[in-house]
Length: 135
Image 1 (cartoon, rainbow, N blue to C red):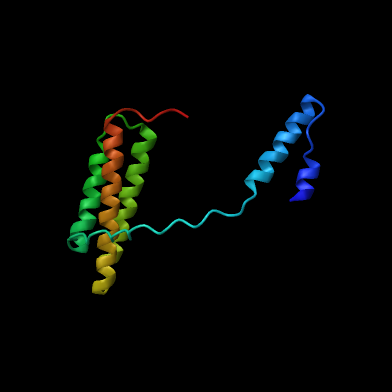
Image 2 (image 1 turned 60 degrees about the vertical axis):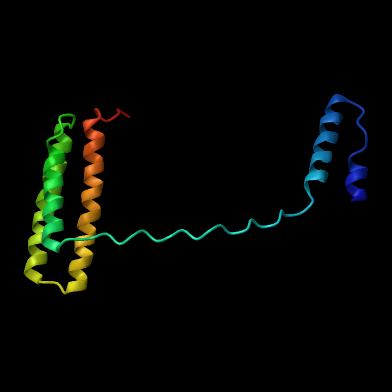
């Protein structure tokens, strides 16, 4: 501590005064780490969502994509992207039905489709509120 005080002698000029102030702040600020913050209450898990069947949830995704495509504020490029997503989803769903996955896998697919429906619905809502901003 005494070496810091020796370095931070009273200043002889304006520049020295700034250096002295910086030394004083550094010396006062070096008192160690603050104590850790106590943990808060645990965050509860999200409630379980009531899912339909894999077929119902995936059909809902196709319907959401179709509704999103009807947004008047979409550009032609966006509509082409939605067409491609719809086509790919239909192909994937057909392959999924053909493979006849086990119940746990069907539940996971239904959950993924359910999440995708929420995402597409949010994108559709944003679209209906105006054209997307230009970069």
